[in-house]
Image (cartoon, rainbow, N blue to C red):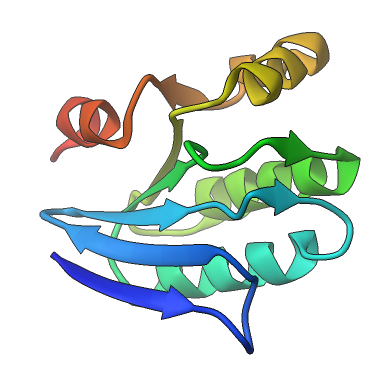
Length: 125
């Protein structure tokens, strides 16, 4: 498994790793108006360059705001409109993040899994 830290120039706390057929994207501790646009741009770049499955892991994320939710919906739309059968899934939502997805009903748009490993297993080609 390779691991690339995207810090300094990128979103602080944002890391990526490749595991079998999936690109695992570790979301930062806070995903909000200060970093949501950059997070979205980096995730979309990774999807262009690194295959068909991206799993965004929220195990370390404790805060999302409306800008973050908008960025995630935008990522989902971009993936849906792209050729090549690309997929994006969410994993390891903390209690606070899960409640936000339930309140906004966004859980209906995304494939959400208990862990990145479960998402990878369920979504493998």
